[in-house]
Image 1 (cartoon, protein in one colour):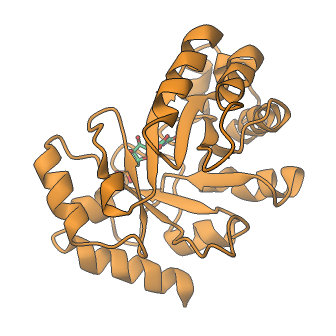
Image 2 (cartoon, helix red, strand yellow; image 1 turned 180 degrees about the vertical axis):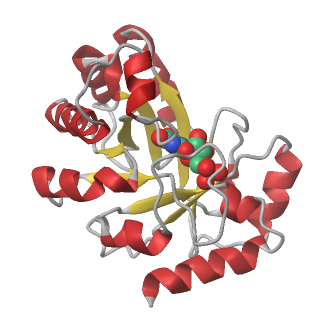
Length: 231
Ligand SMILES: O=C(O)c1cc(=O)[nH]c(=O)n1[C@@H]1O[C@H](COP(=O)(O)O)[C@@H](O)[C@H]1O
């Protein structure tokens, strides 16, 4: 783990992918900001920050530079910790997102670029017209662009974390979904690793949704994951 050692943030980001805000609020009341950060996606855009959690607002911006700039400027006011956009939106979109934060000096949200979704494999990339030689190759290219155009880090699968860390170094946040503890289902995820392996591969933060939120004992599952990582 490279990011924010001093602040001692938990490496876990729980994806609060509940359709019902009440369920999300109920769940968040039983866990603590010392255990994890929370990711709020398109399904559930609520302000859980009030309870003291750092919020990763995962709206994956992908639009023309002017629109993304205005969106980033608007969400900055929500006091979030991290936000996401698609690196494939291009150079000017990434620079515009960064420029929206120039007026702010303190507690500026981290801008994280999505590379290739963890649900995709090489055949799917080819199907959508991206003829890369491998997923790793394409993810790496996107990560280098993210660094060049002033993003704070990337979302990628844990399979690519080691290579990105080696190429880009410590000062770059690597967030990895596609996390599956042993014996849990993969669902729609393809490029997966266990929490322990993902941390050892260089991930700073693991985004974990269903293995925790759909477990019969979500709080026990979160505790077990944290203890496996730290053992
Ligand atoms: O940007 C993301 O957070 C994301 C990127 C990606 O490549 N893969 C991915 O699964 N995610 C998100 O990470 C979470 C993973 O959830 P689970 O598969 O339930 O653990 C979901 O909220 C996804 O939207």
